[in-house]
Each structure stands twice: as structure tokens, then as C-alpha cells.
Length: 126
Image (cartoon, rainbow, N blue to C red; front, side):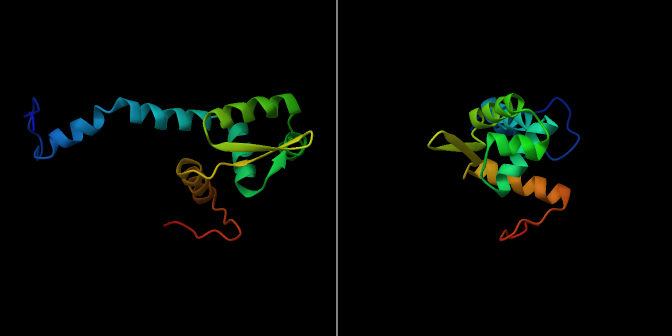
């Protein structure tokens, strides 16, 4: 293991190397920052929250969030590219819902916790 020392010794530095190695994995931080950036728009967050609770088509999503269908489609494209939602086609209609991924589930729980929402059938996190 390489030796690492800090210029100033303000506190216990015994774990400084392992912390630095974690911090050097910038790709991991970039991925997390991208996910949060994708939810940085309040309309996108509203759409994501809706899709965590039910599957919907673009027209119904637009009606529920009081937006135009082109605007909703744009937000859905961003959320889908981020891997936070998935879609399925049924005839001419496309339906969207939250993805079954750790990231989507974590963000869903975080939003519910911050907004003090309890989803039907969901076990609350502490």
C-alpha cells in the first residue's frame, strides 16, 4: 500500500490513504452527480415521483403535471437516458414507470422521506 501524508496534521490521519483512494474514483462521483443533475429540475422530479407511484402514458402524465406533451416527452427522454425510468409499448401507446434499479429506488425513497410521503405497500426507511 502506498504511503500518503497530509501537509497538515489536524486530526487522525490513519485512514487518509483509504479515503483518498475513494475520492480519486472520480467516475463514481460523476455518475452520482449526473443522477442528481437529472432530478435537479422540479418538473422532472415531479414526473419521476409520479412514475414511482404508477405507470402512465405521456398524455396522462402531461395532464397530471399540467405540462404540454412535448415538454413531458423531453423530460421523459432525460429520465430514461439516466436509467431512472423504463417504458413499454402497448399498440400505439407507450407507458412509463420508474426503473427497478437501486438508483431509482433510492431516489424514490429519498423523495418520499423529504416530502413526508408514504407510498402504499412501501416499507419506510429510517
